[in-house]
Image 1 (cartoon, rainbow, N blue to C red):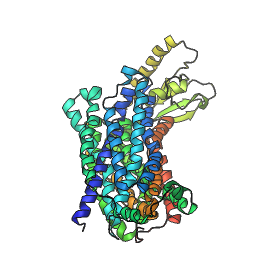
Image 2: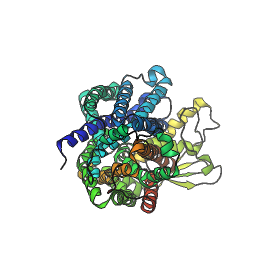
Image 3: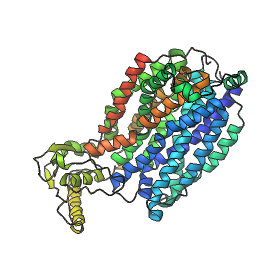
Image 4: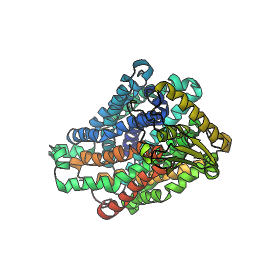
Length: 540
């Protein structure tokens, strides 16, 4: 039973972190709209990948935020540090809501957006370690998993809140949401900022830190003590490779990539997809606390690594089932009329052009660009060197064309004609331009998404307690923050970008799953062999 004073600590820390995650997730949930608003100068596939990269940029700098604010938290205190981070996060998020789009200020728009994303990432890099350390240092022995699991719910609750606000704005604003209404959820973060700061101002400092401060035991050089000494650096590296890397890819695959898969690959309309994901989050969120509580009894390691293995073993059948129940027409068309690009491999390139200057005009690139735009799966078959690419849709063959010798003025009409022929062949073969709402088996899609979220709760519920217990109090904020944010910021944050790019490259809609599977298996092996479980150790 958690007493009243500790419930207040948990509530204040968790609520403030919910708001921070709300700010951060808004961008991820609105990536498709943001790609049109801020990256309009490139083709659609590149625009979406670039929007995902801007999303990932916030994750890329999180480890630097962990270093800066972790050091501050170990020297000055936990409370003051996560007050600073929440103010930075709230202001930078609100500014996205008033940022001019590409149509108004050109390339300055995506640059400014990336700068704001970097500020968000820096702030979040210092937030989590402070909240987790603060709550763990208040928890009585034998209950740290339970106490910190409430903070673990905040990421999912923040995403849930962002989805609810987005859905509400879509309903109220209708078509205007796509043009300017998407800015409203970002501006609403100012209200959340005020509430969060007020709540956190009511907190007192961590008792463990107060005792260290009064006895002069705080670290004078947290960075050197954390990363300059092998006995501690060893645990930092093991925490990254044997715990947080796998936790991160399972988390982002279950909560983010599943949403991207529904909307971008299966062409489920955004409102339906958001409602289904929100429903899964509502079902799965209590399991954060369940697994946190369970980790106090059987250990953090078994639950986290078990979640990694379960996810790795079942991702392919689960995402295949999502296709079957969310857009069966794609599955049926793929079976009866499979698409194959027959092309010279030397003519096929990775079509990622972040500055919009490259021209992909080989016959293979033209064919694959059209298929990526249509959002349909395809296989690849090698043709003779120099051969013009052909797209086979079932028994039909649609020849592409080599755009290299064609004048720019003639290229667009030829490309439009090829796209028209390809679209006609796809429609004739049963490939839908979007998922048919009447054929979406919503209960089964909800069930699959809920399973993916429960995997998230397994790996994420106990992770804060596991990390806190690995490091001494004098350098805990710094030491636990870095592996957490490298794992979640780099391994997890880049998952949507890497996975989507792999799909665009290969044509296999499930190929992007190899990234989280490989990382999750590696983490399970490293963590099982090298990382201890210190659930019964005292926090000193």
